[in-house]
Amino acid sequence: MLVSRYFMLGRNQATLDFLDVHIDKDIPVFVDPAALRSLQTEWGHHCVSLLQSYFESVLTAIRKENHDRAKQLLACLNERNEFHIGYSKDRSRGSALGAVSAEKIWESLVKSKAAVTGVLHDLEDTILFVDGIGPDMLSDAVCNIIRGPLIQYTQQACNYYGIPLTPGVDSGPVWNTRDEKWESDLIELPMTKHGSLILIPKIIARVKQTYGHQEYYRHFLMPVLQQHHKDINSSLVHVLKGKNNKGTEKVYKTDLYDLYGADKLASAQLTGEHPQALTKYRETKSAAPSRPLGHSALAAIENAPTPNFDALLEDVTSLAPGHKEASAYENAIEKLLSALLYPALAFPVKQDNIHEGRKRIDITYVNDAKDGFFSWVARNHPASHVFVECKNYGKEIGNPEVDQLAGRFSPSRGKLGILVVRSVEDKALLLKRCKDTANDQRGFILVLDDIDLTKLIKQRQALMYGYGETLLYQQFKALIS
Image (cartoon, rainbow, N blue to C red; front, side, top):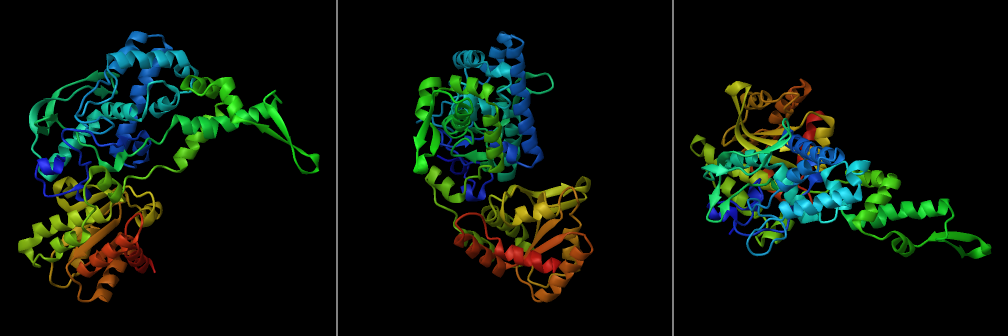
């Protein structure tokens, strides 16, 4: 049973910000450290700092030969079941490090000398050089290290979606960067008949880790070794005769495998001698970050239907215009936009307070777009957040509504907003009002009515990946033309 069904949320994965996992078994997705590094949010930066702090503490302990502390730090990545992701079959079991596994990982770290030679920089490097670390174990280790931010996210998500929290639940080990140690406390978490839950933002879930040992060894380390043997003219160099009797030098990868082996110990040792291979690998991965899982991929993983955009739109258009349905309209718009604009926009917050609570924003999204319209805007204008104001009006939208949204902008929060309305009688006049705001450098306001939402859905459904951006781009272009 999925979390959404267990707690009767009236939503599915498309309209939820968190990963809608099963309460009693795992789904085959992972948390990728590279996905966390690509998050341009305070929450993401906090997670990355925790990973760096923890792993540096482990490496420092090994370099100083304080092996008892290293084992203790590793052992606290113990097996727990709150996350419900990974390869476990049937009941969730977790695959992070317990006492026995920690001993083996410590032995691998010491034996490979990767911890003391400087080859290891980040936690994801362990999947390349440390025996026993695979995608599942790395993901569970990451979840344990960022347990603190995930607990915070879970509590916020539960308050947002109406999931009850149970007090007095054991937090499990939480990494303290200041004191460089694990701590635990009694906290509030959602509970099911199978135990506590810690929710994960779906935007950081992946079907595989960015880093992979076989990929690195074969496609990055091997070419460097081939060139090295050519440079020293070793006995592994074969000269192939071609046209005009010109010889072509060739070093076969099979000969290199026979000479060096192809395990992680060999990979660590060879990388220490040829660090440029790892440098290029990191640069390649950084230049092409993995994408969040789309609606279709998530639906296939969870054996659930893909988003029904028409039904989400019907929930909006079926409401009568007017103040009486204002709250229901805001909720319906949030569901629709959360599905329609994912994965560009994430982490929705309704009735977000600013200016010490003197102003509120109907819906605030974090702009985490990697491509498309929202990414383009963020590269050229302040747009770290996107603000949405919902007006369930059956009348003309005037200066007060435009000024209200513009008053929510700032260079630090962002200066891009969407005004969602039922209908617009004079679109030319409203465009002039929005252009005045843009020309006065007070921000950019896009306006979507019921007809525009229909167009956006059709554009989204016509795209293989991404979200309907054509209409949004056209409106933005009209503001600056």
